[in-house]
Length: 106
Image 1 (tube, rainbow, N blue to C red):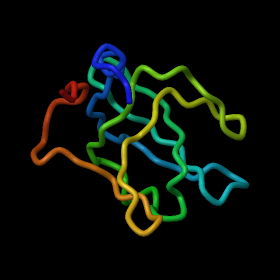
Image 2 (image 1 turned 135 degrees about the vertical axis):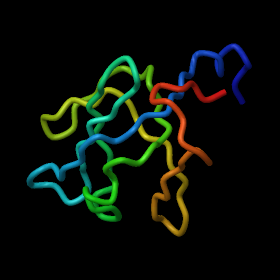
Image 3 (image 1 turned 90 degrees about the vertical axis):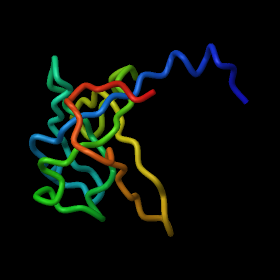
C-alpha cells in the first residue's frame, strides 16, 4: 500500500507517438519518439514482439513522465508507457477521444 502523498509524486501524461523503430539486435525493444506538448521524449519499451513500429505511429498513450532516465542496450529512455497485460501480451491504453499532447492524467 502507498499513501496518497506517494501517489501524488507520480506524473502521467498523454503523449503522441511520432515515430517508432526496433532497436537493433534485440527481440523485444522498440524506441519511441513521443510528443508531450512542450517537449519530445525518447522512450524505450519492451513491446516489439507484439507491435510493429508502423502500428504505433500517431497513437496517443499514457506515459509515466517523471521517472529517472534509464538506458537499455545503449539507448536512453525518458519515461515508461502504461499498458495492460492480457494473457502476457501488453495492450496499450488510449484516451477515449483525442486530447492535446502533454495532457495530465488525473
